[in-house]
Image (cartoon, rainbow, N blue to C red; front, side, top):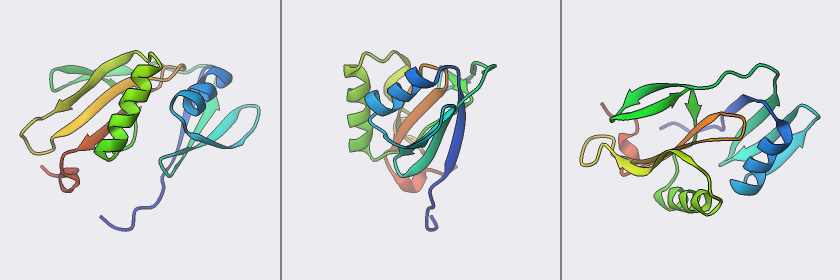
Length: 139
C-alpha cells in the first residue's frame, strides 16, 4: 500500500448525545471538535464525524458468507489484538451484535475476523482483522 492517509467520514445520527456517548464512552474514541449538531472523533487515526439529521434511513442487508450483512456499513481493519480488545469491550458493555464476532472465509483467500453492530442511531459498523493484511485486496 502507499502512504496511507487518514480518511474523513461523516455519518448521520438521529440523536447526538446518546450516539456521542456510545463512541466516546463505550468504544473509547477520543472526541475532537464539536458543535450543537456534530462531533468529531479519532477513529483509529481517521477523522470520523457524527452529524445530527432529521430523517436518517436504516440500513438494508445483503447476503455474505451466509449472513445478512447490513448495507451501508463502515469500520476499520484492525490488528488482531486491537480487534480482540474491541470485541471484548463491546461484549462487556452489553452491545448487541448484528453478526457476532467470528472468522469469515476460514482457510481461504481473505480470511478475516469480523463483527457487526449498530450505534444508537442505527449506523451499521463492521470491524475486521485479516489473517494476512497482504490479502486485503486479494481476489
